[in-house]
Image (cartoon, rainbow, N blue to C red; front, side):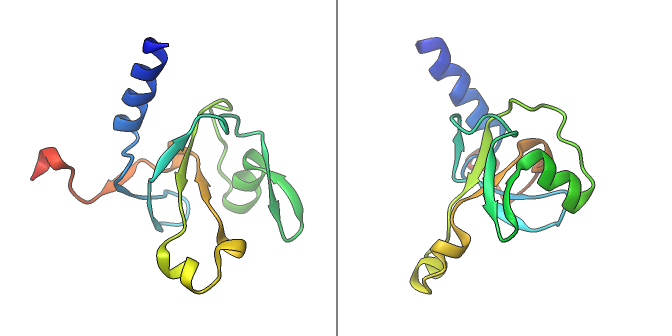
Length: 113
């Protein structure tokens, strides 16, 4: 169990949990709030206006990008307070990002101050 916790902490540190990341496909900035180890399969589905889609299909159809590791944990960006106040949580909800497409960190870590 300790080994799993150490692995998850190392992943959190490496994938910049708490930092802003810019995605390679749309160059938007997202805050990496946590890592979802239960949604570790990018073949899992999520709802769209056109029905359920897998992350693999979504990235391929929308951005012409192929996910290389199908079993990676997903980086989660939770809705901002302004979205919650506007009542957009049902529309927006949590945003799940494939870490391999979210490797452009921005901002400073505590170590850089």
